Structures are given as C-alpha cells and as structure tokens.
Image (cartoon, rainbow, N blue to C red; front, side, top):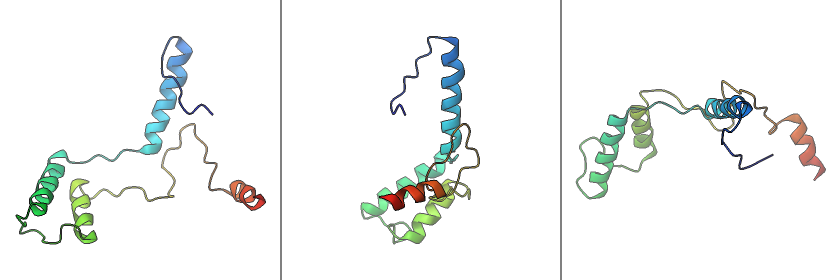
Length: 109
C-alpha cells in the first residue's frame, strides 16, 4: 500500500482513479456539517469562562454534560458515527480489521 500517493493528474487515468479515491475517502470520513456561528458562540463562551467571566449558561465549562450540549448545539442535533461503527458508504474500500480473518491472524501471534 502506498501511504503517500501522489495526487498529480498527468494522464486521463489519473483523473479517473485518483478522483474516485478522493471521493471514496471523503465518503468514509463523512465530515459532519456544523453551524459555524454556533461554534463561534460556544468557543467565545468557553473562552470567557476560562478567563473568569462565568457565563450564566453553565459554570462547569469542562463538564462532560456541557461538552455534549455544546457539540449537540454546534452539530444541530446530528449524531456523529461512533468509534468502530461502519460508515454508510465504503466506496472502493474494504474493511480488513477488525474481521474474522484479522482475528485469526492475531491468534497466530
């Protein structure tokens, strides 16, 4: 596997193969749309709280509950994919681990 592929497009085949690879990679990552204005609001509030000007919204800026509220607010309630959860679109990629095959290989070690 080439861990640092060139994305140069010198030939027509480059356009076909490399663009599909980039599209598939973006599908797997599936970046979540977020509200930039809400992100700015949350960051501004958290900075003020860190500087000692406690917000009336929450006085425990670092609590997991408030962090989850902030993320939910910024993402407009959209849930992000959990660790280990398969992406909706795999494109041309194949999951090789974890799998039954990778488990067998690990047992050999």
